[in-house]
Amino acid sequence: MNFNDYRRHDATALAALVQAGKTTPLDLLVTALTRLQTVQPRLNPVARLLEKEAGAQIEAGVHGPFAGVPFLLKDAGHDVQGVPTSYGSRAIRTQAAQDSHYTQRCRGAGLVIFGKTNSPELALKGVTDPAAYGRTSNPWDPGRTPGGSSGGAAAAVAAGIVPMAGGGDGGGSIRIPAACCGLVGLRPSRGRISEGPGFGEVWLGCNSQGVITRSVRDSAAMLDILSGPEPGDPFVIAPPPAPFAELAMQAPRRLKIGWSTASPIGTEVHPEAVEAVQRTLTLLRRLGHEVTEAEPEIDGAALAQTFLQMYFALIPAAIDQAVAQGARAADFEPLTRIMATLGRGQSAAQVVTVLDQWNGFARALGRYHQQFDLYLTPTLASPPVPHGTGDPPPLQMMVLKALRASGLLGLLSRLGLLDAAVAQIARDNLRHVPFTQLANVTGTPAISLPLHWTTEGLPLGVQFHGPHGSEALLLQLATQLEQAQPWFERFPRE
Image (cartoon, rainbow, N blue to C red):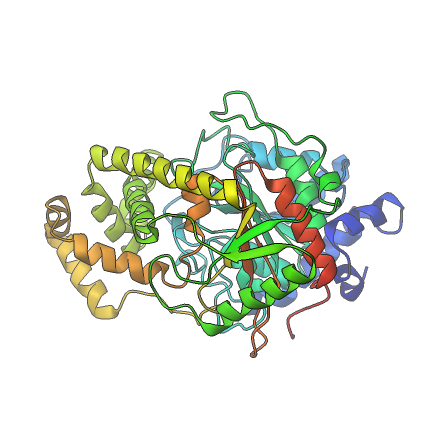
């Protein structure tokens, strides 16, 4: 199959061609690998190639709803037995003891796994720039980020290597890159997809696994494949009344949708992000939905602060676990080690307090959804940012490194004397992505849809939040919007 024909099909359509005998899994794999070879030097979306393993999988026979469709896992959380899951770090090289449940279900669906996509170290950033594997670039503008932490996945899909790719979302890491790259990014509800067997919950329940796609129907079909509990999972969520793929094709009822374009942390929102929501509101009204400007009664700055407290607190634990498995702490990136030192300054009592606050945020969002079916915001506060945007200033990094080397950084952190500095770092870190953490903290589903392109031709998604367990409703609205304002034929310029 030539690349132009390949790119005109989503994963569902490619699987249908294989089923009809019009192409073969090997032909599709060769097309995907050829495309990867073409764009890898320019975009760097793939961190680890598994070409031999993919060939062996095809030779053994592939079966399932996506039989023969090429697929890429994320190099974070998606374990392949005998292959390192490096989490974007040169420090982590331990081979996975077994496939994750996520990987098992992808294989069971017939997806041909031929590599793992790039991710920032420990999946900690909204950009993808690990020292271990190099920076990933946005196919729409290689001078800009594809987002993160599933940035390699989004770049691979937008560049046409695969029709969809695996992702994980602990603070926006599916939705941010989907918005940056003109794609569909659904973050499922907490408990919808198993994190096992290696984990019960990731990031204190903030993380959800999922996919980044070009079509809503692929997102719905993959949710059917990936959903459902595994033995020992800490959460079991009620299944939908019918397959998500069927429910997504049903027209949504007339919805009451609240919306806001104000940054929850009080930072600037780019006019293009505001325009993205305004254009979506016009489309929603035309489709018969009721829209009202209204925000949940949540202190957004406090939510962001508690999210960053969790974020800092988990880094030293991740490093300690890696070291126990043979990694060297000195091999982690300097900023990761600095954040780990800051995290060690937090007490167990502070982390417990954070979880209590998260419960309050979830209750407030639950009250909001008693009045509004969905909540609409920008996905990003600005168009995809140029590479290097948001990096700590050199002087700040120099001071932090010196404090860490002297041992003062940990001491000052434990004494609470760096709280103002940490708050500023947090504010700087989230100013381009302040809208996504709400879903993670509350465990609710949210989807980013590619409904806007800027005057410079850059994609800029909008985000819909739903109450816990409302993926079917989000997919129904997404399908309606996709039909009303199609995006599938929009490709980056070569």
